[in-house]
View 1 (cartoon, one colour):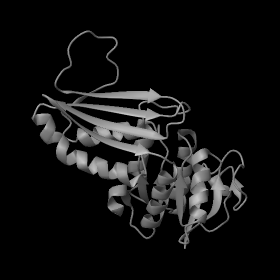
View 2 (cartoon, one colour):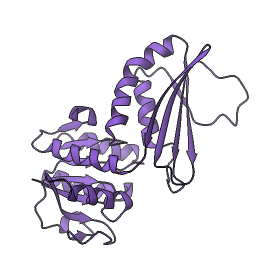
View 3 (cartoon, one colour):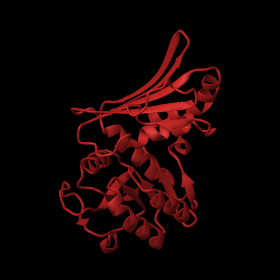
Length: 248
């Protein structure tokens, strides 16, 4: 049995993770961390991870950047594997993950979906070939109207996968310029509206044809499921940085 400390347990995703964990015989959430206690009552909720007294094997974090520093500090000081699902981290916080990975096992993913991570793996293989063949690459992401960051962390992760060679320039806004598209551009566009869970299209536009790779999330349960897969995977792993691809 894997004992999970869930950070951000009272948020929307925290509640979904709680629901999915209750149906998984290999996982139990022993405690949660959040500024408010809006969980389902199946485990105690603390404002600080350092107040937790229950057994913890691994931390799953679906909170926000403001809570990240304290949670990372807790994991390092207590030697706990850390599944980071928080988006919008600063460059300084991302560097802190690299430093922490010397001491603990850390998995950080902009998207815990198995499908998205398979798509990133595929992009690393096909994007260089299509780019060299003259195809323009554009990424369009769509999310609900409550999402704070744009573009999504997943869109940026897909862009990084397509641009593994580092020879493309990301373009987020063309409204302030008046010239044709440069060949080395990789355009990233964001749509916000309604209750869209998450849609990502990677478009390869060539002469007389378009290839589109799409991923559509119909429920947030797929992200929760991936996070629990990651939590179980990290148990017993040596210090280092891991990705969802490692779980395949």
